[in-house]
Length: 96
Image 1 (cartoon, rainbow, N blue to C red):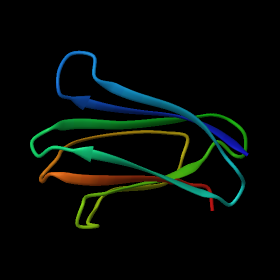
Image 2 (image 1 turned 120 degrees about the vertical axis):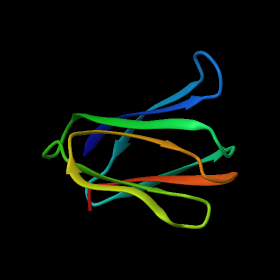
Image 3 (image 1 turned 30 degrees about the vertical axis):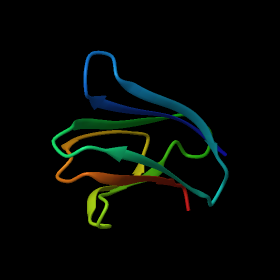
Image 4 (image 1 turned 90 degrees about the vertical axis):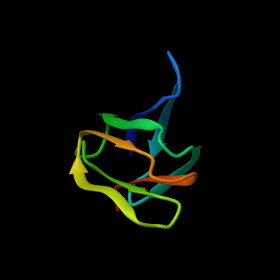
């Protein structure tokens, strides 16, 4: 089992951020959804705190299911993007 710290920073104004600590069971996938307005600058950042081989996959999709970012077997990752459209963005973490 892996323990992850996930941080989503939305540059909407000073100090706007979401932080989540979660346990990701072996061979599991967990997704989160965030409504983001077009033109918003965002940073998705995660770090494996403990467990497993300290590696996890991360995938970010826009509202049209286009993959904006995909990494496999990382202990830490950070990705900054500007939302190209209004809608619900999907962030998934996996250790499958």
